[in-house]
Every structure is written in C-alpha cells, then in structure tokens.
Image (cartoon, rainbow, N blue to C red):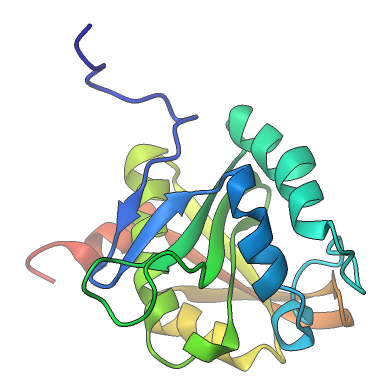
Amino acid sequence: MPPSPRLPVSTTLPLDTPRLRLRPLTLADAPAIQRRFPRWDIVAFLNARVPWPYPENGAETYIRDIALPAMAERREWHWTLRFKDGAEGDRTDVLGVISLMRTEGDNRGFWLHPDWWGQGLMTEACAAVTAFWFEVLDQPVLRAPKAVGNIRSGRLSERTGMTLVGREDRPYVSGTHLSDIWELTRAQWRAQTSPSS
C-alpha cells in the first residue's frame, strides 16, 4: 500500500537539525530520562505539575500515563534530543526533551541536561519543532511562558524571534514566579525563515 501523501497530525515525526536527531518519545526512553532529569537546575522553572522530589518511577509514569496518551489524542507532541551520527557525543544518549502542546497560552516546553547548556542545541531543537507547529500542525500562533528568573530560556525566546506580549504569575516547581509571555505568529515565523529574510 503506498504511503499517505499527508500524515495525520497525530504523527510525531522524527526531526533533524544540523547536530541533533529529535526522536518521538517512547516508553523505552524512561530509563535514560530518569537518569538525566531529576536535577533542581532542570526542574526549578518547569510547570508545578512536575513532582518534586522526583519519584524513582517518575519518568515511566509520566511517559506512560500522561505523554503517550496526549500524543495519541493529538494534544501533545514530544521528542527526545540526541546527537546525530558524526556529531560529538554518544548518539544514543538522551540530552533532553522538547514538547509542543495544544494548551491555551502554553504551546512549547523543553529541558536540556546542563552538560550541554550554552552550545546552541536547544535553539536548533526549537527551530525544528516551531516549523512542525506552523507547517505540519498549521497553527497560527506559538506562545511560551517563561519565569522572569529563567534567564537562559528567556534569551532563547528573544533570539528565536519571539515577542514579549505580557506578564503574569505562574506556578513552577520552585514556586509561583512572575512570568514573561512570549509569542511568535506564523506570519512572523515565515518572514524570519523565508529565503529573502
């Protein structure tokens, strides 16, 4: 049977960046995530729904009971970040996770292990999933709230062409913080990524 010319939006496709392969999240990723994720410098500015202290089966429970059902229902798309063949590091190792959500006012989230901070990897991953959001899922706007104290993440939003459109208090693992609301419209994204720009 020939492949369908257009994939359903429930399909979370592998995505490539210059250095990374973004693989759709699976239950088999739980041990690697459990090993990397439970660090305060990773979770402090994540959504307050993340349990802390992180339980020993936290990754497995999250993937099995929350992420995979949301992916099946076309509400969320989750990828693990790994180095591609030929890139520095172990290409089988999970560096972090990036997600898209159809949640009002909160459409993209991510975490990256601190060993790989400051190398532009999450900027690459954000570009790939933002293209997926606008071109495959056909969404008109991407919004991403960031705690004001989460300086690295805020700089990434600014660097990737997002606009600061508001501020509000939001709950995080580390407590309630004033948060910047960053936004990128499909028209802005296309203008930034067009060959003439």
